[in-house]
Length: 304
Image (cartoon, one colour):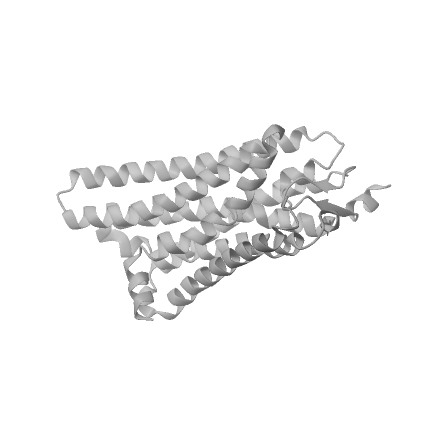
């Protein structure tokens, strides 16, 4: 076959390994999780957009998180649910669809880190420079930070996926419940050293940039809290920062596990489960952990 034929051939997605007897219960559980995640994230966005007293920089920046969670769950869950009810030999997807799915899978992964970075910056300004908060965190700054988070994610993912689609492929099976970059370039019989190197560098940069930035931010916040005698400030810092940190740790741990397990074939089953959990756990927990722990949002939900 020539490259054109190969690029437009059908691929077989491994999907979830479930027995025929357990396929319907698994389908129901995942469907309920997906519906809950979508309803809760859409509900948070709707609440913030319609309540005028929630129209502030902190809540506008927070909107980036449920938007990204909606992308993360929608990009894999509908097709995964569809495949659960099919025979394993019928989990076909076109190469183009697979590339699109992989692209947005990685957009979700990268944006998770960058969105939480800009939210950490907002908390830093609010706690360490409260008198200058309104002057620094203007509508323009919110837009700039949001563009930075999404723009950087789209730029790096476009380069990464671009390096993969240049390859022809001689295999047709995606050994994963859904398409991602590593699964795609593993289809090729060409030299994929560049893809592996860029993938590792990309992973290290994303994880390091977010973790170091958030670590520095929290060290500075902790320093202010320790030296400050203001109990109200310290209480506010603990509430907002602990919530933000919990969301970050959930995302960081679940994401790091499946990214690095991709390099160890002997742990393929654990990696597949971890990759699926990354698209289920954070989007489902974020509205609860972050949304309900935010006083203003919680009060509005209680009144509904």
